[in-house]
Length: 444
Image (tube, rainbow, N blue to C red):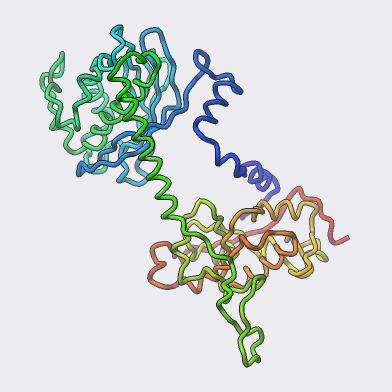
């Protein structure tokens, strides 16, 4: 049984982020942390940075990728860092999430970045053992290397880096380049070959340390070091390369949206008409829609679109397009008699052209469901419910240039949509729809 309560919608409203927040730069965030929030150097925390690193996959193909430094603290002779990165980009998020390494890099008396050494490297406790500064986000063990557990990485791989200077690590491309792996007390019988089944995890520990060293070189402590100066130039160039690639990916992935109504189309306004009518803005039917089953796939997965299915939970559970949210139209939004019958829970009664609010909060909740100013793709079973909702939204003041009727589930039966359709006819849902805590203003 499902109960839809007001608190849910108020929470949704509080979670809405303004467009201005999306435009914050790293500089803006740092300015806030270092001034407004009084988290500047020498206080609680003092850094938010995005750093490029050369990520390497299993076949040893490389890509420039991003890592994040959410924490930097300068101690007397070393700097504490947390650096967050994806170790394996080839596995899905259900088996692989972001890792956070807690790292301490020294500030050598020579003032040269090549002499800076790894003081601490941990994916759990910090150097005091009091805090969990790190987090192992990679699979444990990896699916392809069942013997290469994090415990083994911690016992055999991580200790290798302790005490290593940047000068010792800077020339290494992969762990296969390490020639002194078995040197040191207790390491005589260890072999780098043990990691051939977990090279992605191990290689990217090396790569992230190298990237963090490059960021370490940007600290003012190394201002007099010529090597640090050249590293800073490379560091900034990599950041620009990755930023440009990211911008290009966004531009390529998000095709410009057409207007909701395709005015090149025609339709029969009445079944007895002998001639078809040209589609015009304000026609909310699926026949005139610019986005339909013929082209929807190129508009899926966008960050600027809210995808909604208006059918009830029973039909939605049996078959729906992935990542579409279910908001039942007839159960929650509209019933012509809702403004006359107190037993009906819908937000509006009357007609869709002149909807009558049932509650004082009806418009507020409607906006929680269908945010004003947001681009929204709507679907149902055939497109009829969407047509009615769009008329209702128009009557309540919505900007209809951002709302699309993409038709109904019946139109998405083609083979090209099979990979994004959840088809579970065995599921049976019994739903009870209601609102609680609202102020009913109709019937009077």
